Length: 301
Image (cartoon, rainbow, N blue to C red; front, side):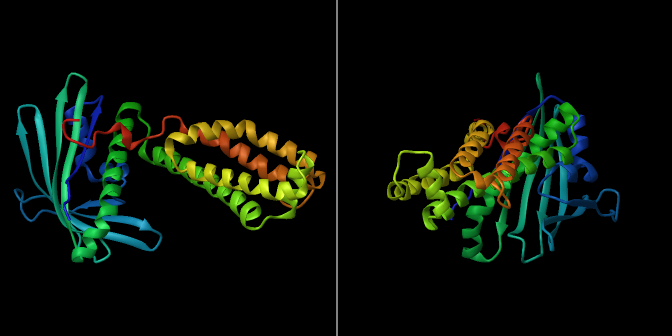
């Protein structure tokens, strides 16, 4: 299977020395780079020996991948700096067996162009190569997102931990909305055909119960489509704004159709109010959200 090296480039309003400091110091590097949880430099056996280090990546609770790295040297050509790296992991759980790459720091009139290109070999032969078709784009995305987080840190002073907290909080809320719309559309309307759903539709429309039982399926499918569209980033802003106006109306219509739903346990008022507030919170979180789209992913594009 043909593979392409991962390439990421970003323009920063900074200097070569500042970006060098934030990328070459392990305690600072680990803060902005989503690919690593900790980076620890090893003690050199001699002064001119390459700098080696170990790293860990916490994939999820209970699953930690560790590996090694070695700086292969720094090359300076005029005002351009290049840092080469050799890395790998002995753990079988790591898709990456061994790889090489470099960081380049290019000053320009607008600040600095910071870029990286790296490639790696996978383990487990053909199976590993097949899995890499999914893993490699994730690694490229994580690299690009990390570069944007670094750029925002240097340009605005906002720490990476704050940026990542806002980023993941926002997408957790969007995934929640996706689940809610899918579940509410498919389970009580399409699959379960809950009598309350049919009764409420019949009570606020000229439809008969039989007509409402058929029409409710289309409403459920529409809600399921909204749930799927919520997974598409460009659509999220539109839906979040729409929900701020939609949830109060849905609550009002539900109470008019069946007044008892306002006093039932886990009722429509508390449910829709929660979703309404989360819509507002998500809109605030979305402001100044770090994004991988601020990086170039192909050389010269």
